[in-house]
Image (tube, rainbow, N blue to C red; front, side, top):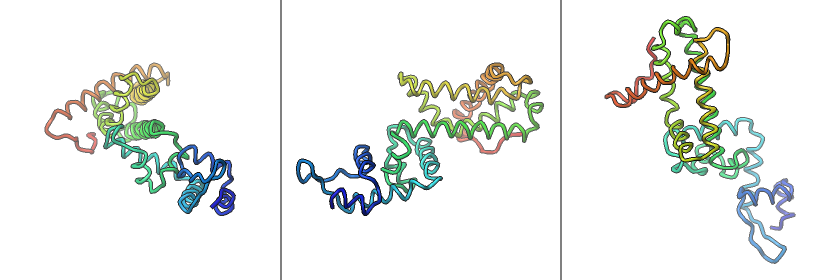
Length: 230
């Protein structure tokens, strides 16, 4: 079919079709002449699928969740965008509507995990009696935080390795992760709400938490029990 026919049948403007083609979101058309290209059912199906998912408010979250699972269980080089698309039950082109690259997917996965980890730690602090309960027992805070770090450790190690190789975006993200985790870990130990004081206190918590995780890692019972000691 011609481009005009594809526009009519899909409801997608020609300019948008050209954008999808350049982005690799639909197959390339067949060149029939210098200025004429032919499209077929593959192009129509791809366009309709992109349109069907573009209005799904949960689509991006499904992609990020699939990316979290993929990067948590495999290294960056082992994960492909196709893997994430398949786990999200989406076409590969649909993933590229939300993320330009696998790098963007890794960043989104880490940012969501960071947010979840901070929320989980704050909730756990409250369940253990709030700031007062942890201030008197820093070791307990390290234990609690250690259990939460185990869940995100594979991705954090991947990020750290990429930063250590000189990848500046990874280094910037690694600094953001460390500051956020430190502030979250140190907040129960400061009363004035000062961010830098919380970060300073939290770095000590993180050090003890990582020491706890390392002791688990070299012990006979890795991975550790998911239950948190109280």
